Length: 160
Image (cartoon, rainbow, N blue to C red; front, side):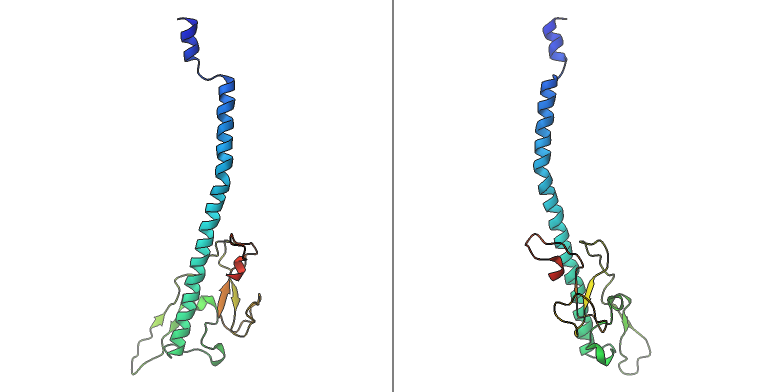
């Protein structure tokens, strides 16, 4: 075999390998911020979906209470006492002579807050201030994320 043929079969030189590795590092470095932004955007969309789902179930509970379909305590203003009540369900008020006890559930499970990773939401009751961060314990009028981080639009997740 000639020297020229051997050289063609030898593969990459050290310089070529260093240049190829450098190019890969630059490309990976450019892709990393994009990947982080994509993950953050997905978490924000999941947070919005979870908030909407829980708030919708609170509204459905309130509607059922206002229509006297379920029994609620007078001081609750028709709102659920806690989030677990939405999951466990409540017994429908008896209409007519029906002997069967029907239960209605408003939420399948309490979704986890994607920003904190826990199903530990901040709660507000009707009696609390609009920007209160501690729950009075009377009922659940609204929820918020306990995350102290800032969203990509500059607002705090807890203000959503």
